[in-house]
Length: 37
Image 1: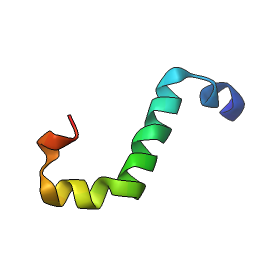
Image 2 (image 1 turned 45 degrees about the horizontal axis):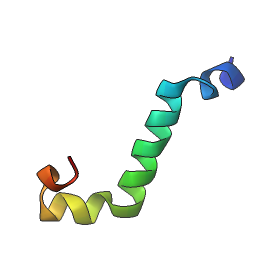
Image 3 (image 1 turned 90 degrees about the vertical axis):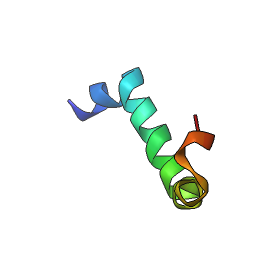
Image 4 (image 1 turned 135 degrees about the horizontal axis):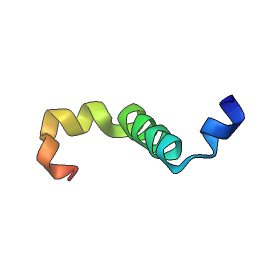
């Protein structure tokens, strides 16, 4: 089941979002959330 979930695009998008939060989420939130969009 886990392997199938990993192959879905939605799961990949979640991973990307988590990576973005880890790398620059904190600094971006301080500057302003609108800059990300």
